Length: 478
Image 1 (tube, rainbow, N blue to C red):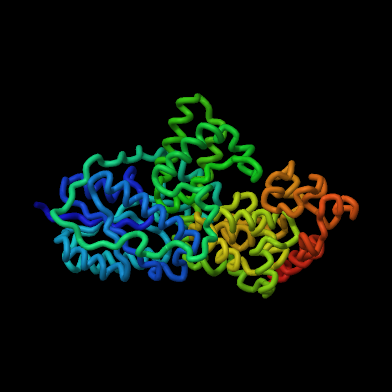
Image 2: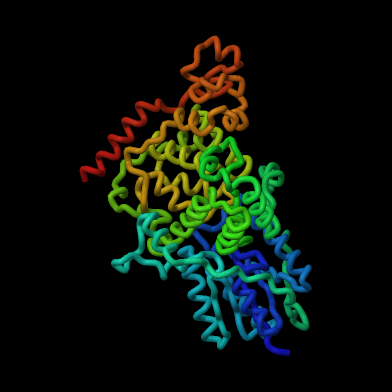
C-alpha cells in the first residue's frame, strides 16, 4: 500500500470545499485526518472560553462526519511539531497537508513546522481554504497594502469571480491500522460552570448547521438585508460568522450560493451588500497579515499617545451590561447569554467603551475575544480599531455614537432592549432609551427605581462626549 498522507485540520472542519483534503484524497492513497490541540501556540490569542465551546461541538460534528465516510479523526494534544513527527513515524506517512491560517502566531508556527518536516524528507503542501484572496496577492497601484476598504474591494472584485467550490470526496482511503487518538471530551473544552446553557438553543456548530444557516438566510432574509442588517430587533443577518471562522463553510461557498440565489430568483436585492460584508472579512485578514502589530497596537502611530483612562470599575460595569444606557446594556447581555452580538450593537457598545468611558480599545478586544463564539483575530482587531479611530478606514475621532439616538433609530419599537433589559420593559418606548429623563410617575408605573432596579447612567453623555473630543484634540495637536 502507498504511504499515507496526513491532513492536519485546524479551523477547517468540513468535508466540502476543503483543498487540503481534496488533494490528499485524489491519488487514492490512505489519508489520516488529524487535529492537534495546542492553544498555547496561538498565544497571546489562544481561543477564548466561548470559542472553546464552539470548538468542542465543531470537532464532535466533524469527527462524526468522517466516521460516516469510513474514516476517523485522530486527536492529539501537545506541541504540534512533536505530534506530527510522531504521527509520521507511527503511520509511515510521506506527506502532510493543511489549509493555511493567517494569524501572526500561526503563520510563524506553520513556517517552522513546514521547514522541520521538509528537512526530515516529508512532503509538505499548504492550501488556501479560508479566504477568497491570499493577502499577499492584493496590493494598490504603489505596490503597498490597502488601508481603505472601498478601493480594496473594488480592486478585488473588478474582474474576479471565485472558482466553483470543491465537492466533498465520496471515498476516503484508510490506513491498515489507525494511530492512537484521544476523544474530543478528553480535551476538556467545555466550561465547568454551565454559563453556556443558552448557547445550545441558539447555535448548531458544524458543517450541516452552516449549510442550514445559509439556506435560511437566502430563503427568508437576504432580500431585506440592505435595510434590516442594522436592526437588532429583527432577524436581518446571516449569523454565519462562527461557521466561517471555524471553517465549517468557506467564503467561496457563500459567494456561489449567493450567485445561485440570484439566478434562481432573478433578483439581486441585498446580495451585493451581503457580499461586501464578506469583503470586510477579507479586508480584515489583509490588514492583520500586513500589519500584525495591530492586534495590540494602533495602526495609526499617533494613537500611541492617546490619554486613555484606567478604571477597572468602569470596565466591569460595561462587561456586566449595567451602564444605565439600555441599548449598550442590551448588547452586553446578549453577548454574555448567547456568545454573539448584533453588528450594529457591537459598534454602539465599542464606541461607548472607547469614547464615553475612554478605556483602551484592547480591553474591548479581550472581552470580545473571550465571550464571542465568532471571535476572529482579524475581524475583532479591525472592528475595535475602527471604533477607536486608530485603524484602517477608521471612524473619524469626532464620530461618537449617541446611545439614545442609536437605540431609537435601530430598535424603534424597543423590542431588542425589552428582551435583554427586562427591568425596564414596561417603560413606554419614547422613554426606553433614556430612563433617567423619564418623569417619576412614569417610572413608578413601570416599576423602575433608578439606582435600585436599574442603574443610573455611568457617565453623562454630553460631558463624556466633550471630554472625548478634548482627549482626541491632544493627539491631533501632537
